[in-house]
Amino acid sequence: MTNFDLEQIDELMLTTKQVRLRLDLTRDVPIDTVLECIQLAGGAPQGGNTQRNRWLVIDDPDKKAAIADVYARVGRPYLERNVDVAARRGPDARQQRVIDSSLYLVEHMADVPLIVIPMRLDRPIEPAAGYYGSNLPGVWSFQMALRARGLGSTWTTFHLEHEQEVAELLGIPDTVTQTALLPVAYYTGDSFSPAPRRPAEEITYLNAWRSPIRTGNE
Image (cartoon, rainbow, N blue to C red; front, top):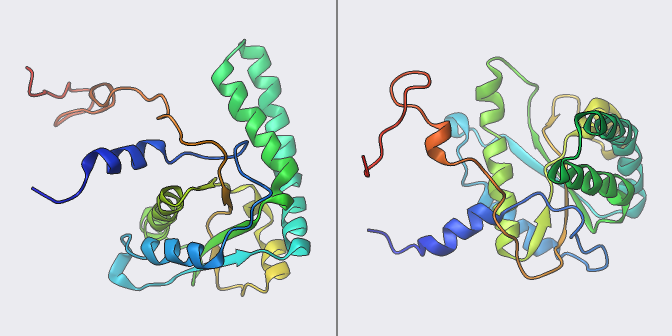
């Protein structure tokens, strides 16, 4: 037994979502609150406990605008291609909502209160799973910590096609790798519903590929 409130923890995990349309672009985000979340993110697994992860928080309007321009150069054509693909496949309301909200973020990236870039103090090495596995779990922990404090975020990577340009803008050394970019803002509304997902029994196998997993009811 633990003293954790599993109902609340489960709700946090199920309702930490990629927030775009519901980012509050009018309300400042305290840096101290972001630092609390980064501190908590540091508890995520890191290979060898080397602690080589770093974070860059951007609130300067000119730098946000420059980053937004880089982001849009990649994001806008990518999403417009997805609009064409979706049109050929037929109506899919859920996919269309994702595309629409992503296009909204492209148009408003410069307006978010903060942009947060997680990084590693080295360049990618093989195997990639181990390299990114020491950084990206902390990014998700960061997003859940934000969610618990009424803040929304979105895991994005469009800017990485021009990583060097962003690095020069922000003074990031060549030896440092950016792994994502997260707009951060308070979210509007009271809460979020869980995203629709397939049941665990449909996507989990036992001992061999596609071997059905047994449950306690069988």
